[in-house]
Image 1 (cartoon, helix red, strand yellow):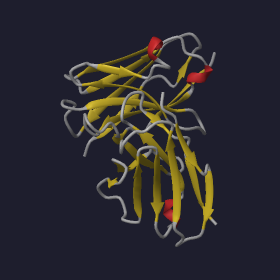
Image 2 (cartoon, rainbow over the protein chains, first blue to last red; image 1 turned 90 degrees about the horizontal axis):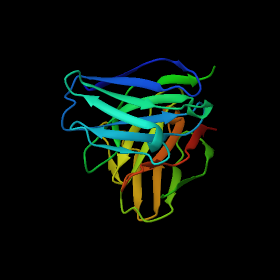
Image 3 (cartoon, rainbow over the protein chains, first blue to last red; image 1 turned 90 degrees about the vertical axis):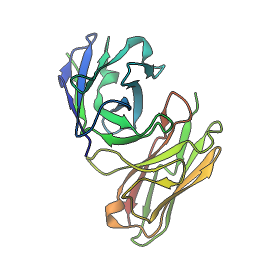
Image 4 (cartoon, rainbow over the protein chains, first blue to last red; image 1 turned 180 degrees about the horizontal axis):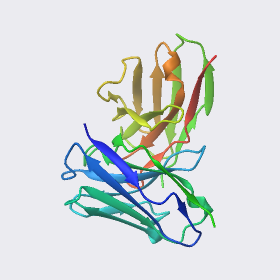
Length: 119
Length: 107
């Protein structure tokens, strides 16, 4: 059973960089796409971006200028960096596995981590 | 970008009722449409992809239909454990986009 676990600071100051890591266990990180999705408290879901195990990425255009997603297959981890954060970036951040290259839906999710942007 | 609009935004129905949720795309997306269930305080769960293909383990009372711009999620015989917010998601091309959600409650 594939498991994903997000880790990183729960509080980030405005204008700083939000950094999160997702650790994959119970299955291989190879041959899949891996994604970040966020959900502001009490609101809906927003796709952030995804990365293939080879390192190729695709980002939400609304976040692209501030976003970097990277992967370390040797550690079975992928990471998110979002720069110049504001209160609007406060959300639960989920990492998820993409079902397949042709079916970009999310079949396994981490438990989510709440990141609050505040001074 | 293609927008996904769900209706209604919330509904209340009795146990055993048939419930239908609609998702409309602003442009045609063929059958590249998925449905998720998010129970209170929980992680979203994939129910259906390719508009009508059920994910493994999903109860048979959940079904999806549609193609192009109009899609539906149907819950036959609503159960108390189906209380949740349901989201559609299009995936024909990036950016992947979710609908605003439909909150289902028991009357």
